[in-house]
Image (cartoon, rainbow, N blue to C red; front, side, top):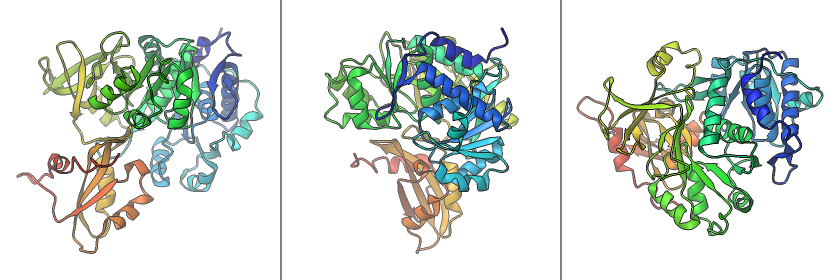
Length: 503
């Protein structure tokens, strides 16, 4: 027997002998069996190789959520290549940065964007896959036969996911086969996923939560998924009586709570609701438990680490905390190079098999954030209570998390500051009842003719929708401290009630 492809072997072996059993129920479409999923993935792998994709090459993917997109993920790994998913909201300018940085051999996009992507592909091949799973790549794959996965060790890269950096430029977090397998195995066991589970899969598949947590855990557990293209309250509520689990971001839960169809009876077959990607308000916890009888399980992770901590499946799920380090993961709270006393606030660091391999082509940034002894400096401020529960109390950097997506203010500010009539800007996150945080731009102008709609128009083609400010506030000057530094905390305090009336 030859060498194995570490990640693919783990995912395929889990459902061995169950090829005919349903893996995915696609509302409005055909059910997809485990056997069909992996056969489709093999054809995708063969198509990539036919296009000249070599082991270690990057395959950049900006496509709608479909089963064929999952097959492309698995097929990329089968071919020994590195999967690079991109948010579907990214503009051509943003995609151009990722393509330039990662130098992929192939870019897969929606047919409507093919010409735009070809113009910035920098020599990479461009193929298409649309929201129904059709396109030039699907056509090529359908004409392929089976494929023997390319051997890959646990240390080989399986994916690169981009995350915001301190300069506003995204960093490519390199994730190995072992990073993904170890984390999915731990989560499967810690959250008690089995072949009896039916997971409502409503998360996007261009980031860790939907791709590596929901998908990999389901495959390893031989669980079935109700595969939804995105958040759809009707579809989720329809699926709930026949499902057992759901993973979501806080926005999903607040939106479902606003629907009177969410009842204890409707949720009676469910055993687990999981939330992550942004802090869940204590009020949401309490409302959800009162309405459904279920207590949401909140966990904590990052692009660089997959999941690091979780509230317990069995035991108290404490609102306002992200639980304990997962089995095999260590956590420490540091300040000025030393651990802080219990209960005090410091920067959270984590270490374990889930922690990434470093940042793509950024050795200096890797050295700043990933210690030689394996500890990753998360940049999140946290504290551990006497019972061992970890609470995230803030962010060392000014990262905004809106609807589960990360926005780094510097990127938005740089674009605003270049617009005519702008003196300077400060981009902040303020509480929002639906998105958790909303992006708000406070702008000091040097022209009386500057209006919010001029700013909005100037940003529209350069930023994904989720990064664009939900409110633009014009002022004569930004607040500063005695050192001349703009006081963003003062701005956040001033505008914290901006969206109180919007539900």
